[in-house]
Amino acid sequence: MKTKGGFHQHSIMVMLAMAGLVVLNVLLALGQAGNRAAPTNHQSDYTALARVPVKAQAKRNPLEGDPDAVAAGRKLFEQHCSECHGNDARGGKRGPNLRVRVVQDATPGAMFFILTNGVVRHGMPVWSKLPEPERWQIVSFLESLHQ
Amino acid sequence: MAGQRFHFPRLLPCAGTTRIKGLPAISRRGASGPRKQGWGSIARTCFLGSLVFLLSSVFHAQSFAQESPYIVTYDHYLEEPRNLEVEFFSTAGTQRGGNGFIAFWAEFEYGATAWWTTEIYLDGQTTFNDSTLFTGFRWENRFRPLSREHFINPVIYIEYEQISEADKIIKEVEGHDVESDQAESNSVLRQGYNHELEFKLLLSKTFKGWNVAVNPLATKNLSPNNPWEFGYALGASRPLALKASPHRCNFCRENFIAGVEMYGGLGDAGSLGLHDTSQYLAPVAAWNLPSGWTLRLSPGFGLNDNSHRLLLRWGVSREFPGFTEMINHMFGGRD
Image (cartoon, rainbow over all chains, first blue to last red; front, side, top):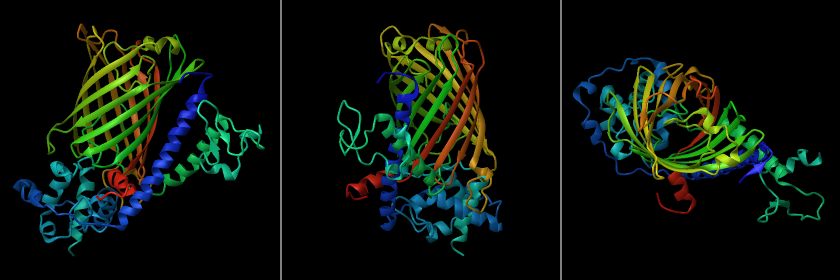
């Protein structure tokens, strides 16, 4: 792998890496297009909601009544959550339907808790990397679904 | 310089070329055809085609990566399950007593589960007025032992690496690593190979938008008679805005994260401490595009005489959601 003469081989490696990225990009785009065409709901498990501590359930949404929060929450949901829960939150291959009664009856605090802590053993990652206000914006969007 | 002219039909990456092992790639028209293409010309064509395609996709897609700006430090967030993140990083470094260099590495990071992320690195470097080398690979695994968020969140990091001593990516600093170790020419440095196991404890907390991460590390060279070596990395970062704007945007403040990281060696089992170690302080910034691309930039400054004076790093990464499903779909499997 050794060459004399500076950047020549470096350039080739960079170019090959970029070409690889392009190929991967195309393949994944094709694969994702196929996935979107065939959504399937799986056996959903909502027991994590029942295990949310009482103190966390009692938390109020500080952005309640803020119309921008719902719009921003919708955007965040599409960016971070729709891959698993579906674009319309009706569930996808990996995440359960969030329009069902058990979710819509949950308190904002419970939704916030699940979002923050994830359900790691069942495949939902923690989302505390989103700042707290952004997580509340997603909760606002989820609450708006039953209206 | 006809070989460097740009022809539209050649925009398709690598189209119309054949490579015979051991020989430069040639056009399918054959060596007797109107044009011969050398490696450089074909690579340049691939590059331009790829660049156009990539730039067109940077601002157009739907997934979104909320990546941290750190390049050396780790927070406790793992790759989302079944997603693949492909990253390319580069470090340009100054070198006293030798030639400056650009080291680069590609990362393929896969979220195996919500509690396990596995990652492969491929490293290389170019030293000015010297040569370009592939310097080895690393296989990294991160495990999240706790299922919920806590006041401090631990992640266990285990890495195996097989790299030559010419490796200059400086992704971690350990033991008595100092600038002068890399002053030799590549022909000398590449003679030595390291098989190392590296352990880190990634401790991290996010509070009011701020992420603070502390990563103590211990490394053991698997060759005999090498002591345990120690090091650390610290990081703090925060998005420029904590609330998302209601509209999709590339330049919203919430897409930018800025911070700082500090890293260095702590000696080895025989001589713990800061003497004969190198230490760095590096502002970091990341731009998370709604298309799933992330760009990172970090100028790192050496804090003592044993450190490189400047390590200028940049990186680009792309998140591919649903990688597993995509592979299944491609091969006709069931989800």
